[in-house]
Image (cartoon, rainbow, N blue to C red; front, side, top):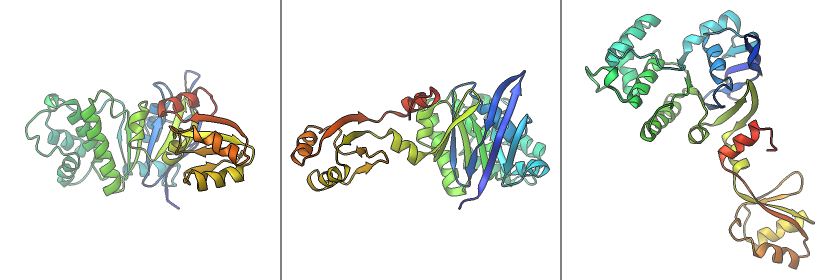
Length: 305
C-alpha cells in the first residue's frame, strides 16, 4: 500500500459566515497526480491555502505524511507551491529571482538554483529579465521557485491560466517528467477538465465548497467510455452469444445484469437479429458514454452518474 502524503478529515473554513469549505475529506497517495476540479469559487484555492499554511481551518483535521498539529508545520518544508499569481520579480533575471527566494527560505548553497533552472529548462536565459519572458517562461520560472529545496509534494493552483496551447503542452510534459523521474507527488487545481484528463491519475471534484466525488483516472475513463447498454432476458446466454457469434470479449456484465458492450457502437444492426435467433429478448439497446465535460456537469448538477 502506498504512503498517504496528504489527508484531510471534515475540513471546514468559513468567511463571514459563508462556507468556503464544507467538511472536505481528501486522501492523496505518494506518486499521484491529483487533479482538483471545480468552477471558480468552488473552494479549490481555499483548500490549497490551508494546505500551505496560509490560512487556518475552522474545524477538521489535516495531516502531511501522517503528521498533525505542530509536526504538520514542520512537514511543510517538504512541499513546493504555486498559489494564485506566481511570485516573480519582473525586473530580475531568472537566477536573481531564485537567489532571493533561496535566501528568504534559508536554503543553503547555490547549487539548488542551477538544478531548479535545469529542471524547468531555463538555464540559457542569461541576463534576460522576467518582464521579457513569455507567459509560459514565467510559469516555468514560478515552478522553478516551487522546486527549490527538492520538494516531495508540489501544489499548483490554476497553473495553465493564460497560457497558449504550446505553453500548456510544455507545462504538462514537464509535470509528467517531474512525477515520473523525480517521484514528485502533485496536486494541481484547475477548472479545465480536458487538460487535467491528460495529466491526472486521480481526481477530486469540488462544487460550492463540498467534495462531490473522488475518482481514479481509470474509473473516470470507464464511466465516460462509449458503449452499448443492453438489457436482455437472459444475461448468461447473451454473454455467450457475444463471445461466440460477435467474436468479442470487450464487454462487462454489470451488477444490475445489464451488459456494457464496447465494440459495436457503429454496427448495431446485427445485435437484435442475433439475440432473437438465440431466443434472447432484447428489452433495451442504448448508446451510452459522454465526454468529460458532460460527466463533470452531471456530477456537480446532481445528475445520475
